[in-house]
Image (cartoon, rainbow, N blue to C red; front, side, top):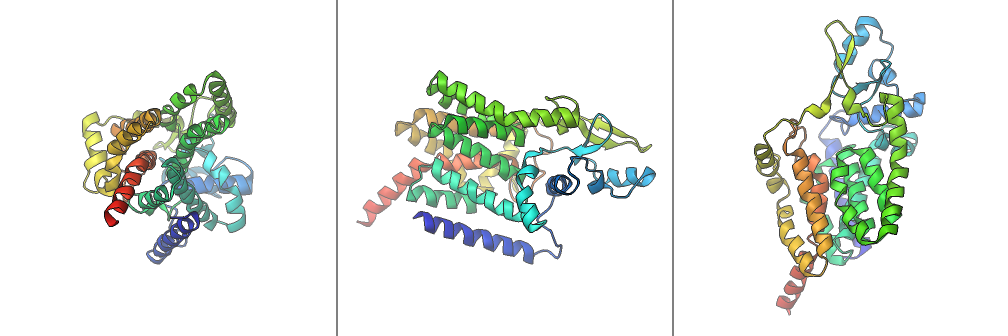
Length: 366
């Protein structure tokens, strides 16, 4: 498959999914579901108010009991600053990145941004899988045969995080150390837990020598610095995030804080089995070809790329381990959005497997 064919195929599939999304709902912005509206509110606050104070978005023109009552409907989706302001609970990076799209297209800009980032993710899978015609076919299969497809009609922070992860891996394989570091730092800003999934990339960086390590660290620090500054401004400490100050509204109308990071209480093996085998959301059913990744990693090792095979396999396993104990593992639709990095890496690591299958199929036809 040539690159133009790859692009055309993606555009056709994505357009079909978006069209179906609009056809299935009477709501104007039905792609903004779950957490999505709150990322959109942050972008709106930045563009229209010039700040991260979400009071105008969450409870406009409200005060007193009405203000508290309205905020109560948003509990679980916003944080409280030390001085009592409602501020973003979620990462501020994606809202910042979407500002040009929002400025040009209005709320539909969030959907445009999402389709673009899905395309960037699918292309990243192709590049990491070998950037061959077969790899591009593999990437399209990864798109249509995984939950990523259903999140085309969305405004997904999970796709955003997966994009940064997959391209950090790509940058490391191409020895673009500064880019790798920058993307790693941005990934942490996008989703703190992505630090664990990015960590194996450090092995590839270390294989590049001390200069590579220093350059990558410099890039990561540069990318993460704005996050630390914003954390200090919004939450009172550079190392505190919105998840540490998850807001609650007490019965008397006052605002309080709870720790979102305390929501990892599910028994490990039960949680892991749910991630893999749940009848509705299990990875084995929602992304059936993804399960070939161990074979793909082994063939990649056999092809002389053992360190890349190890690093990608570790990224997949770490993603599974991180969410095995998560209480809200099923806060998702059509497949597990928390495993998007694992899905992307799991398909990309199959590049050698698919190339071998292509060669054998060609010989059979001859």
